[in-house]
Length: 106
Image (cartoon, rainbow, N blue to C red; front, side, top):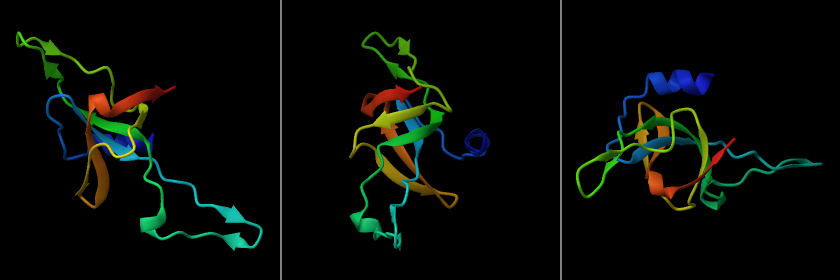
């Protein structure tokens, strides 16, 4: 529920067929001796997140609006190097096109 509350106060409104996603936090690897801490540069870029905001959709060649297939609050999988990472109001978000979304996690 905290994710939906955060979406309500988000100061980003994506345009067209773009969406704003908050990447899921990666679990830290632990082992018998303690916790393995990797530097930020060595970590894999996450490919899963929750949609915080969606655009209005894209227009076809005749100008008709085609709505997006995804909605706010859905968990999605997206392409590994897709989108643009932005920092707004102290949070890190990813803005990507709907075409970069590979699947909805149900």
